[in-house]
Each structure stands twice: as C-alpha cells, then as structure tokens.
Amino acid sequence: MDGYLGVIVIVAVVALLAAGGLFLLFRPGRKAAPPVKPPEAPTLPEEKRPAGAGEEDEGATTTLPPPVKPAEPVVLPPEIEKPPPSAGRMVKLRSRLARSQSAFGRGLLELLSRDRLDDEVWDEIEESLITADVGVAPTQAMVEELRTKVKVLGSRTPDEVRKLLREQLLAQINPDLDRTLHVQKHGERPAVVLVVGVNGTGKTTTTGKLARSLVGDGKKVVLGAADTFRAAAADQLQTWGDRVGADVVRGPEGGDPASVAFDATARGMAEKADVVIVDTAGRLHTKTGLMDELGKVKRVIEKKATVDEVLLVLDATTGQNGMRQAQVFAEVVNITGIALTKLDGTAKGGIVISVQRELGVPVKLVGLGEGPDDLAPFDPEVFVDAILGD
Image (cartoon, rainbow, N blue to C red):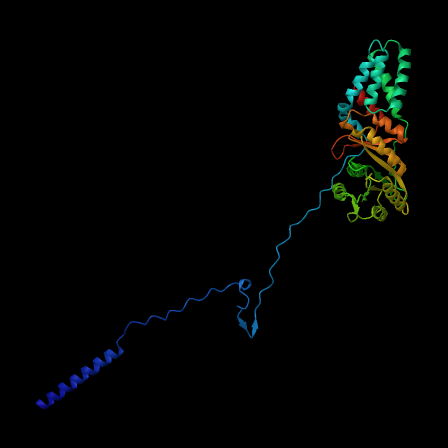
C-alpha cells in the first residue's frame, strides 16, 4: 500500500514538473521590437541630382539636361509717331517769331512815326536795318525808297507807316520767289534732297525734321546718313527715322559718304519711296576737300536718280559769318534753297533778306524752335507781319 502511494507521488511530481516545463516553454512573452531602419537619404528631383549620382537602370546612367537659359528681355520697337502736316505750320509758330523779331519792327515803326524825319533819324533807321543783318546794299535800297514815299505822303498815320514799312520789307524778301520744295517722285524714281551745311548749324536735326514733315504730308521717306565723319550723326539720324518709320541707310564710321548716298538712293528706289534725303558732312577746314567730297556725292547719286533739291542749312544767329559759309557752299554745289535755323532765337531776322540777295536762292524752310515739328515752310507775309506785330 505504501509502495503504491510512493509511486503515485512520484508520478504526480513528474507530471507537475512536466506541466511546469511546458508552461515555461510556451508561456506568451513580450514581442521583440522591430529593428530600426537607418534613415533613407532624400531622393533629389532628377534635374537637381549631381552628375554621376543617377541610379543604374539596366546598365544606363541618367545624365542631367543642360541648364535652361533665362529668357532674354523683349525689346519693343519704338512707337511710330504720326507727325502733323507741314501746311500752316508757320502761322501756328508766328508767336515765336513775334517774340524774337518784334523789337526790331517796333523800333523801325517808332522811328518812321516821328513828326520830323531828318538825316539823323534816317541814319538811325539805317543802323537798325544793318544791325538786324539786312545787309548794306538792301538797307540802302530800303532807306532810299522809304525817304521817297515819306515825302510823297507828307503827314503819316501809324497805319500808313506800318503799311509803308510792310511793303518795303516784303519787296526786299521778294514773295514772288519760288519757295516750292521739289519732293515729287519721278515715276518709279524718288526725289532726292541733298542737305549741306557746316557742322553745328543744325544740319542733321534739320534733315530729321524735314523727314518728319514729309511723313506728315503722307510721303514715304528714306534717309541717308552720309555724314560719316561725325560719330553721333548717324545715330542722331537713326533716332529721327525710327520715330516716324523712315528707313535709315548708314555706313561705317569714317566710311565713304558717296557710297552711303548711293546705297540710300538704291534703297529708295527698291522700296518705292517718295523722297530720299541725304545728310552730308560739313567740314570747312579745307575747301578743296569739301568741294571734292560733295561733288562726288552728287555725281554718284545722279548715276541712279536726279538730285532735285540742294538745301543749305544756315544758323540765323551767326549773322554775316553765316553768309560767308553760304558763299563757300554755293561755290561747291548748286544750292536750290536755304533752311534757316534758330530764327526764333535772334532779333537778326534780316538775314533772310541778305542771304537771298547774296546767293540768289530763296529761303524755303525756317526752324522756329527745338521741338520736332518746329520746321516750317517759309511764308514771307507771315514773317513780316510777325516782325511788325499786330
């Protein structure tokens, strides 16, 4: 009996131990934390990856595209202006003439209105006319005619004096001269205007203003920058042309002026332009060189077209010095008309009379200010009325 109990006890102990072992073996424990992955390097966009860092794909290496050039700024062409027509310009600009010339006119009217006109008064009248650059010969002719008519009139009212002086000034300016600017094309060939004058008189500016005026009159214009010896001349003319849509033909600095003139004429013919205006050099240090140069320019142009106008640009403020310049140019080329600049800035408007008398050609254009539309066809009556005032 005791033996059976011992066996049972042993079996029970063994069973407990076995159960305990199984329990320990299969007991639920804490789950192991997953291994920590190292942080991955951020993936760069393909265009920002450094060279050589592309991933291999079937043995091919990805390369970066070339850098994109920044867009260049868009340069807009200059806005094309629409100039006013030339007709009536001098009437509109009359007030500028009156401001500069009226002192001369008032002085003459005051002298002629005196009750007694003795030799001393006539000497003052003569001096006033010469000071205004009327010239000695025209002054003497005017004074003689005035003395004769004053004797006939006897007593003189202010209106009679004004009428008398107006008649004499108009007679000396000669309103019957043909002041037409010859810019009508000949069939398929454009008219050609040659602009000459000393540098500093406003020659290139006058060329640009003339082009602007003709465009305002509805004409197609080509400009020739044949003053190749003054660095800024071609650029200045280009600016004038760009404003009104006129083509500008230019050559290298210091190049052959005749070549530029020829090319400008050819361009005018090819584009069926109405007028070609050629700006020329104005150096007077050697008259022989100037004569040869201008003569060559004119001859070369005439191989393709007719030179219809040769305009001499004179600065009204230079007075008799300008007259000497005019005479030199008259020996070089056949001048057909005068463009008188800066007439609004001087009281010496008598140069209109003297330059016409000396050269035998009419003043056709006058510059009456610094504005782009201040070049006007010369009107003798408007000019004289501005001198004498209302």
